[in-house]
Image (cartoon, rainbow, N blue to C red; front, side, top):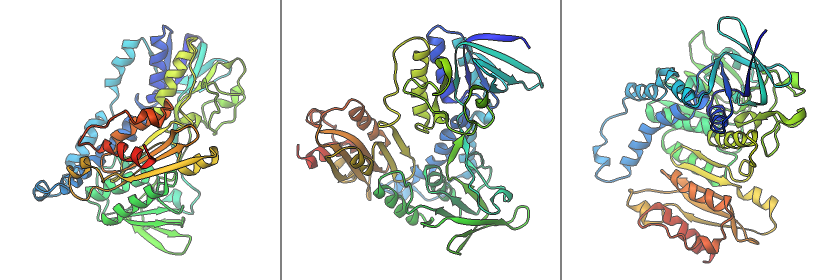
Length: 465
């Protein structure tokens, strides 16, 4: 088998892989990128983009209903066909040909096929025609293969044609009743989106004590209150033990550990993700297949001699978010080119948004994590709706804004904002945490009036400034 040689070979053309390849190319190196599916990956076609597109119609109507005058104009229902058509437009009808010119403009060679490591700096690609192409990297191989849905070992789950994130974001029809297993970001977002699109019944089953269990407790409580106001049934603290479907396409019944049952026409499994590393040749370089690839702060895979293997994005397990994968990819592109770069954000400065109504937006540590790390932690909290910028948006604007402060240094180490459309508040908190801006300096960053960002002033006043 002849080999094609590049400075760098990237496995996976999702956001992290594309970004890594682009950064490498910008640094003057030759690069090939290997992808068995669509260029743009999970986020572009089956994750962030289609899910937020499906969420948007319900959010717009909810915002209008909070504004007297506009509320009276909301007299119809959502055009579901139009919402699905907009989803199809946003994912380019699952056609990635529009992505190729960007790769070409960077001089990135696209190899369509299923790639796997084949020893030191070597990649073998199973091509669509059945042949195998060998690629050799003189400098580095970058793994960017992401994750796949995790299906828990629930009796009968494998036999009911359960939905995963791809099925739910690509749905062509609304089920009358939707069961959702998992109260994390994907489960919560899709539960509310489908209820607002017109599902008659939606039930969320979360085995943990609350929704959005990784965020501050009040966030999950507020989302639950909103869900119940929307007519979504929420069951927490008990997991599913068995699932059955009547016939080939009949209703699905989930039996929970407490013996209760819940019925849906479709069931969405959104209980987590697992690394897509089972079949990418990790064993040929001394790593264990099926596990996240451990990396150092230069994103080099630990345990691989000579440091030529890197892993970016979800596959390394550091921060399973598109923007964090792209951030890591920029670091890798510079490190491979010989520049000094380190990952400083993936542990303690990770911004995250759950696009429910209320939105849940957080960065850095939650209070419990901060108290485990620092000896002197102070928390300040104000109502997100208690500023003029919220009142002018309409009635019933609610939510919570909270800062977690390392009081010895007088710097913010965590922040959470909940409320309608508060995602744009988050980047200011991200900057404050990433730069360790002292609160006494932050006091001079004056928020505009009347905007919701005035909650920053209220938070600093509550701190005592």
